Length: 422
Image 1: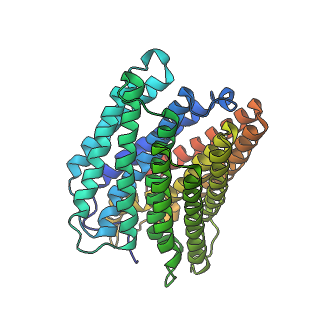
Image 2: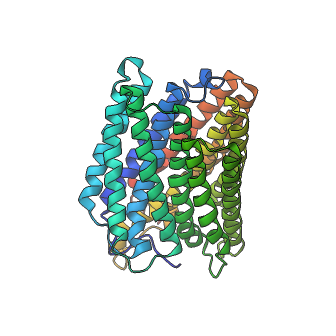
Image 3: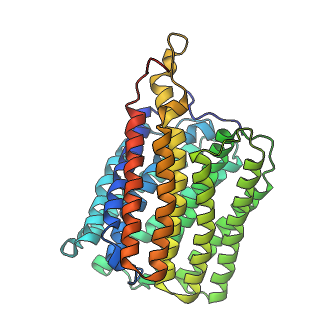
C-alpha cells in the first residue's frame, strides 16, 4: 500500500496536535509518577498505585497518541473523511476530564468515589471515538487488510471499556458480584492486546514500509497475525470472564504468541527489503521495541501460569516502556515533523527554501534519548527481577531524563523556524 500521511480528507492539523501535545504532557507526568513506584515492585500487581500509574501512562499517553494517529491515518487508509471532526474535539475534552478523575481516585484514597464517575465520563468519550470510527467505516465499499486491523481493534476497545466501566461501578457501588481479578485481567488484555496491539500492528503496515521505502513484500505473515492474534485475545478474554478451564487460556496464549511472532517476521521481511538502509534512531527504536515485545509476551505467559506478581510487573515494564514507548516515540519523530512541515512549510514550496524533514528533529538529542531509554528499560527490568528498589529508582530517573528529551524534541518540532543555511 503506497500512502502519504497527508490527504485532502485528513482532519485539521490542530485536531491531531491536541492529542499529540496532551499525550507528551501526560507521558512526562507518568515519568514523574514512576519515581514514587519503587516500593510497589514487590507488591500485589493489581494495586491502586499501579492502577493510577498505568492509567496515567496508558490512557494519558498511549491512548492519546493512538487517537491522534487514528484521526490522521483513517482518512489516509480508508480514503474517506472522518465522520465528524466535532465529535473528535468533544471526545478529547471529555476524555481528559474523565481519566483525570479516575487517576485522582486511584492516587488519593479519600477520592476513591471519583473512580466510577471518571470511568463513566471516560467510557462515554471512548464511545464517541468508537462510533466515530464505526460510522466512518460505514462509508467504505471495500475493506483492506489494514482497515481490518483498525476495525477489529476498535471493536476490542468497545468491549474492553465496557468491562472497565462495569468493574468501576462494581468497585464503587457494588453493581455486580464479579471476580475482580479475572475481569481486570480481561479488561487489560482487551485494551492492550486487543485495541493497542491491533492498532499498532495495523498502523505499522502503513508507516514502516513508508518510512523504510520498502515495496513488493509478501503479506502472508501479517494476514496470519490478524486471525491468530484477534482470535487468541478474544478466546482468552472469554476464558477469564466465564472461568473456562485453564487449558483454554493456554491455547489462547499460544495463539497470541504465534500471532506476534508472525508480526515480527513480517516486519523483518519489510526491513530486509527496505531501500533506506540507515539505522537511525527510528530503526533502533523499532527493533528494540520488537525485542521487548517478545520478552513481554513470554513474561506474560509465565505470569498467567505462575501468578507471580514480580513476573507480571516485569511484563508491564517490558511492554509499556520497552515496546510501546520506544515504538511510539520512534514514530513520533517521523510523523510530527511531516505533519508540521505539511501544515507550515508545504505552502512555501517553490516560493522559498523549505527545510528537509530530518532537519526539523534535533538528531543528537533524539539519538541520546534513544540510548538512555534503552538503558533505563534494562535497569528497570533488573530492579524488578532483583527486587532492588534503589535500582528501580535509578531506572526511573533515567527514564524521566529520556522523557524530558522527548518533550524537548516535540517543542523543537512545533517551534521550528527556517534557518538561513536550510
